[in-house]
Amino acid sequence: MPSRESEVFILRSYPYREADLIVSFFSRDRGKLRGIARGVRRPKSRFGSSLERLAYSKVFYFQKDTLELVRFDRAELIGPPVLLRANYPTSVALDLIAETAEQLLPEHEPNDAQFRLMKLVLEEFWRGLREEPRDDEIAAWTHRALVYYLLWSVRLGGWLPPLNRCIESGKPLAADETVYFSRSRSGLVGAEFKDRDSWRMTPRARALAARMLRAKPVEIELEQCDPAATTELRRFLVQRAEDQFDGRLRSATALDAMG
Image (cartoon, rainbow, N blue to C red; front, top):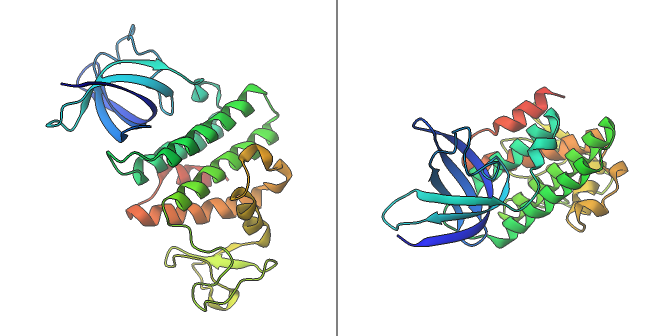
């Protein structure tokens, strides 16, 4: 059974037998995999926090071609434990990142662009947590980093429609025009095509998306990420992501419930 090591982000884990976990992880060199970590639920586990959700770790594991699950040997934490410093709303935002990756990333397909995106966004979360900002600043940069991840994840997957063209008429959408979207459509439409199930997207939200497609999170001013614009953009991106697996992202529902 070949022994391997990979840089990974932990996406999800769930109990298996008495003291073990099945862990889903996203590796830089082999894509999304699942494995069994023996004894990780015991009080003195050798894995520590290296298998916590969204931990950036180096894992050592054994992989056999005839088996679906790899077997963890050990793991070492590389990056800071972001979730240990997060408040509840930020924790739910991080859950949404992990859940989106779990649902959208195919198994056994390396994707360096997606790996670098996740690393960039989690570094932004940690930078904000380390600076101990005020509550209003926490909400702003949490939303900024989350929406940035969703936008680029959808774009890298090839599911981001044009943000400046109506998918019904094919006509350009003016920069100062309020547009609309819904689950039944794959893109944005003008006011003449909206229906009772449509959500609005203001010019400020589209301008924020355009800015995020040109810059890193740290280069985007928090003043550009007002709650209304980021919420509109997040809702649109969540719908585009959910359309790819015909389901619902539970973390997105939890964020909406918190207002």
